[in-house]
Length: 160
Ligand SMILES: [Mg+2]
Image 1 (cartoon, rainbow, N blue to C red):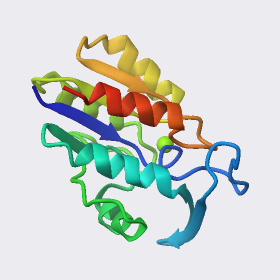
Image 2: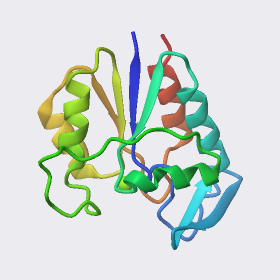
Image 3: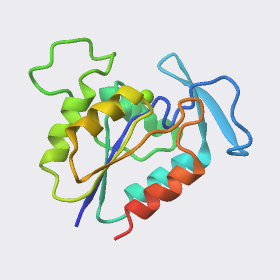
């Protein structure tokens, strides 16, 4: 069985706040990438890399960062491939309304479990509405990103 992790960046790795939630993680790091402020906990990076290095797990970015995801290796993240919009998508790539269709298409043909991580409520609703039995959704709080509990769940879900 192979597991697929669909990974958003903003609000998932990148905490969307100026004040890091120190009750959640002791160590936060901040930087700039392509002109954007980035705030993240090293523990989240390490946990995502650890899941991605499990032999049966594939991690794919599903984020408006798209081709720029290669830049995210500067944070210490492994270089995961990204899922592009479906070929017929003609809207604004930066908005992200292409993500549910692109992710669901990949999930449909995926033979194992799909863990979809995105902080957007409407994306969770779209994915839930599609009611694919092989998809489990994790929705971090945008100002924190993945919590320790969610990291534990991610590890459990990807344990054969
Ligand atoms: Mg997001």
